[in-house]
Length: 344
Image (cartoon, one colour):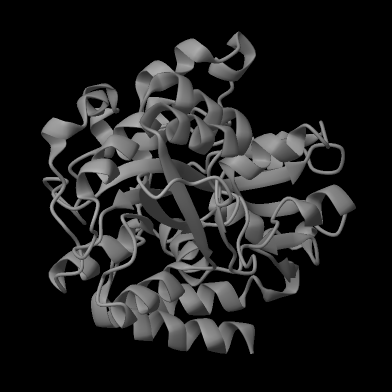
């Protein structure tokens, strides 16, 4: 789930399309738009004397559908969010990752590995991760007014609240506020969250996931949901914008490297993943997108003020209270049913 830009028109380009020799290897990469620094891609091309064909998709669903249509062929490295990994591996869409070919994996935060959706990381490795929390305009709203998800229901915030246009994020927020798991498959708990969200309607002014910092910068919204990377980048435009990790626990998300089962260049795919894991390249991800990188050594390549920024790098206690969004199987239909009712 690209938290930097979503809904961007699909685009395909080759970084060196006009000067590729027939002997060069080609790595076909499929990712969200504007979700990898171009200079990192060019550096990989130069070091390995290869060409990167970088194609983009709008969301996990369109990526999944296209891979299905292509019988998992045509791409060598693809990116997917946590809740698609288990489904794709179960359906035989993914190749096993040979972790011995990725030495920089040794420096990845252990807490990002061994997640429920891929316990042994046989089919996926972390690319970028982040947190869904709360942003607020400190010129209008006091810090003591916003410390938990429940605070968004404050009647003083009528027509001031922005919600992400994302069913799992929004229901995750309501479920957390009521003490439930964001991954529940219990319909009564999901319905309870829906009924709780109905009470929030008078406060909601906009749903936005394409550029969720914009409603704050323009003054359309003063408080609401936000991804930590977008919050960091938005604060550079709007210094009064603050970010909070809710006391009930944040919603954690992670986008992951995967290698399709039909990849024709798996060795180069492993080299690419290892190259992206180099700490200097991880630091570039942090600086460009504002999200924490998986490699803990990335901080050594960042300015001190970025290393210490708690919007980018949450405290361990805030991480421990959060939950990663996992696949919920057929229960997604229940979420979608109540999501449509909420927005109707």
